[in-house]
Image (cartoon, rainbow, N blue to C red; front, side, top):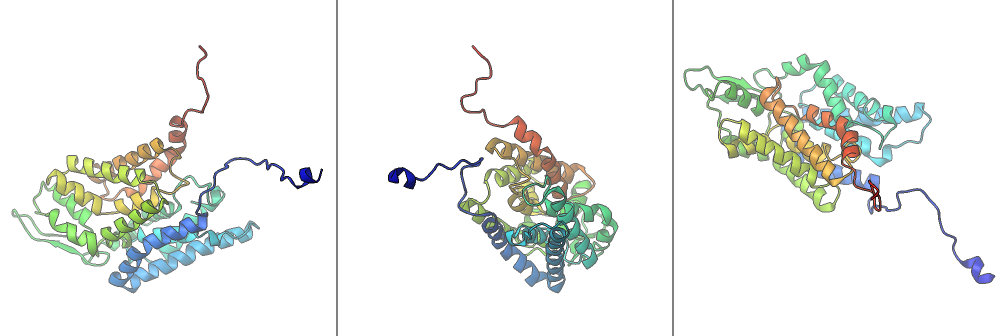
Amino acid sequence: MQEAATTPRPQIASCPHLAAKESAPDIMLWVVGALAPAAVWAVWNMGSTAGTVFIVSIVSCLGTEALWNYLAKRPQTLMDWSALVTAILLAMTLPPRTPWWMVLAGGVVAIGLGKMLFGGLGWNLFNPALVGRAMITISWAGVLAVQKVPGGWFQGIDVAETGGLDAINGATRLAIAAADRAAEGGYGFDLGAQFEPLLFRNLEGCIGEVSAALLILGGLVLILKGIIDWRIPAGYIGTVAVLSGLCGSQGFLDEAIFNVLAGGVLLGAFFMATDYVTSPMTKTGRLVFACGCGLINCVGRFYGPMPESTTFAILFMNGLVPLIDRSLRPRTYGWVSKRE
C-alpha cells in the first residue's frame, strides 16, 4: 500500500503534448534582435526622423495593447513582446518622414484591429504590422505621395538624360525602374549599379530598405536558430527572382537580383510572411504560401499601378492560409479513406 501511494498518477491533458524549447517571449526577442542591426543602421543614416517613427510606433502599439487589455479586464500581455515586434516592423515599412500622427494611427489599427479584435496573439488572421501599413497606404496615399517630391523621402535619385528624353528624379529605385521599363529603357537606368547601395546603404524608400545585407543576416540567424522555416523565405525570394528575371527587360540576372534587393521583399520574406499565426502549419503549405506571395508581389510590381506590392501580397495570402491548411493537411496516421 505504501508503494502504491508514492507512485505518481498519470496526467491527462489535451494536446499538444510536445513543447518547444523557446517560449513565445523568447522567440519574439530573437526577432527583435534580428531586426535590430537594420533598425539601428537606419536611424544612424537617416537621422532623428527615422528615430521618431520608431518611437511613435512603439508607444502607439504597446499603448494600444495595454489599454485594450485594461478595458477588457484581461491580463496584460506586453511581456510576450509581440506588440514590440509589430511596432518595429510597422516602423520599418514606413518612410522616415512619415508624419507622427500617421504612425500613431497605424499602430492603433495594427494592434487594435489587426490583433486584439481577433482575440490577441495566436488568433489574428492577418499580419498586424501589415494591416497598419495597408491602412496608412489606403487612407493617406496623397500624404505619402507628398514625401516623393524631388529630394525623396530622404534623398532623390537623379537619372541622366539619355536618348533625347528628359531626366527623371524619384524617391525609390523601384519607381525609377518602373518608369524606365515603361519608357522601354529610354532613361538608361542601370540595375546592376544599384546592387551596392541596396545592399549596404540605401537612403531611398522605407526605413526597412536601408540595408538588404543586414536583413539577410538577420533572416539567416533566425533560420539557423530554428525560429523560422527556411521554406517561406526561400520560396518567396526564389519566386520573385525567377518571375522578375522573366518579366524584366535588362537581363534575367540583373532583374532577379535587383527586384529581390529593392523594396520590401526581404523584410516581408524573412520577418512578415514567416509569422507563425498567419502562415500555414504544414511544410508543403508554407512553400505554396511563399510562392503565392512572390507571384502576387511580382504581378503587382510589373503589371500593377504601384511598384511596391509586398504588403498586399502577404495580406492576400494570409487570407488564404485556412484554405491552404485544409487542402494540404497531412493524412492522419492509420486512416483509411476507402474500405477495401
